[in-house]
Length: 453
Ligand code: PLP
View 1: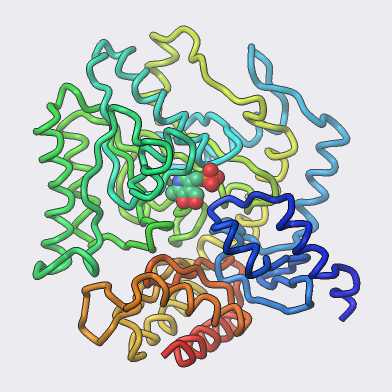
View 2: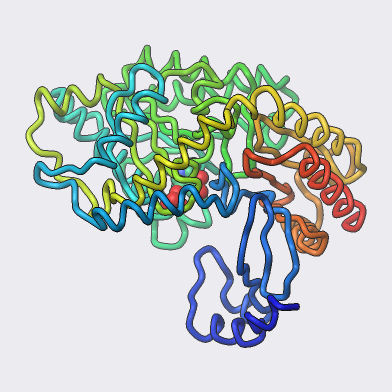
C-alpha cells in the first residue's frame, strides 16, 4: 500500500527497538515481537504502517472524546502559537487562553468549583493533590491530618505521588513505594471480591472500610480519601449503587477531603460532565486531564472547591508548587477548542441519551457468550469479564492474565483496539462513535470472543 511505502515497517521497528524505551512495556518482549506503528487517524479509525485500519475502541488512552483529526483544534493551536507561543503563569503573570479556560471550567463544573490549578498530565495533577491536601490542613491549624487513603487497584498515575496513591502492587514494588503517609482500602469490585454478598451489601461494606480505616488511623490524622468514580485502568470497576453515597457521608461526617480522580471519568465519559455528578457526590478536589483536550496536547489540572481555595487565599502565603507548563497557552487553546466541539455537538448529552444506551444494550448482550462472566458498561466505558465457566467468579481463566492478552491480540487482528486488564477486555471509545461504528465495534468484539473461545 501507499502507507507501507511511506513508512517501511521493518525500518521503523528496528529504529524503535534500538532507541525507544517505552512506558508500561516489557521492552525485551516488544523488541522480539516488533512494535505496532500507528501512522494516522481520522474519527474513530487508526491506520498503521502496513495500512491496516483499526477501530479505536480505547479513544487513544481513554482520552480522545471528540475523535481524531479535528482540524478545528489544530487551527486553534496554530493561531495561538503564532500569537503567543509560550509564557508562564508563575509570579503574578497570566495570558488570555489560560484565563478563558479557567473560566470555562468553572462554568462547566459543579457549583463548588470556581478555580483550577493547571498541570500537563493526570499524574502531575495527583502530585498537586498530594501536597495541596496536606497544606490545606496545615493552613486549617490541623497539621496532624496528613494520611491520604486510596484504594487497592486504584490508578492515579505513575509519578511518586501517583504511584503511591494508586493501589497497584506491581507498581509499588518498583521503587519501594508507597511513600509514607498513604493507606489503602479494598476496592468496590463486586464481581471479583464480593463473595456471597449482594452487590449493594458489598458496596456498603467496601464504603465502610473507609470508616474502619479512619477509626484505626485516627480521625485527627486523616487528610483525604482519593478514588476514581469508576476505576478505569484497574479494569473498569463499576461500584454498586450503594457505594458512593456512603463514602460521601463518611468523608463529610469524619471531616476528610474527598478527592474524585476524574482523569478518565471526566468530560462526558459517563454521560455527565464529571463522573462524580453521575454518582451524585460533591468532591472537594477533582484531578482532570485526558478528555480535557481529547489528548491533542498534554494538559491536566486540579479543580479546587471554594472551601479549599479560600483557605489558601485567606490564610495562605505562597503555594510553592507549579510546573513550567502549567497553563501552557497552546494546550489551553487545544482544550478550549475541544470543549467548544463537545458543547456544540452535545457530546455529553449524546452519551447520556443516544450512543451510550445504544452501545450499552449491544455490549451487555455479549454477556451471553460462553466466555463472558459479566459484560458491564456505564456511559461509554465498559468491560467484558472473561471466565473459566459461567457463574465462576474466581477470576482464574487459566493461564492467569494470558487470556486477556491473547484476546487483545486477536482483537487487533479483527481491527479493533481493546485493552486487556487481567482477564477483562476493556473499551472506552470516542464519544463521537456513530451507531454504525458501535455495531461494527460489537461485531468485531464478538468475533474476537469466538476466536478466543
Ligand atoms: N488518574 C487516572 C484515574 C488515570 O486513569 C490516569 C491515567 O490513565 C492518571 C491519573 C494519570 O494520568 P497521566 O497518564 O496523564 O499522567
